Image 1 (cartoon, rainbow, N blue to C red):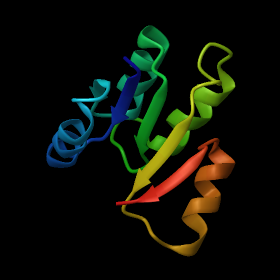
Image 2 (cartoon, rainbow, N blue to C red):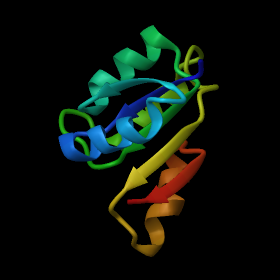
Image 3 (cartoon, rainbow, N blue to C red):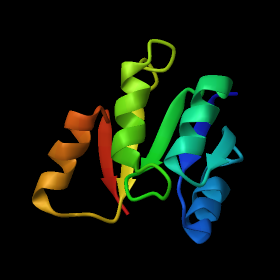
Length: 103
């Protein structure tokens, strides 16, 4: 079963995404960017769904660090964010996100 890491600080959003995916994927979760980095390095997920506005370490920085690390750079990262302004999608791609989805 493919493994997806969800990095989302809002418990309601995190639980909703888990419910949508858990029947098809092995889902693991992190509540902040630093925890997401640790889980990605340890669990080697097939995909990361990354919120950009996170405590401890934001999703922008977590994504940059994941893409700089040889062990995690191959993992596709989809930015999940409530920021729908024009420059956010391009900023997410510049940080290393492979795709961008507005919540």
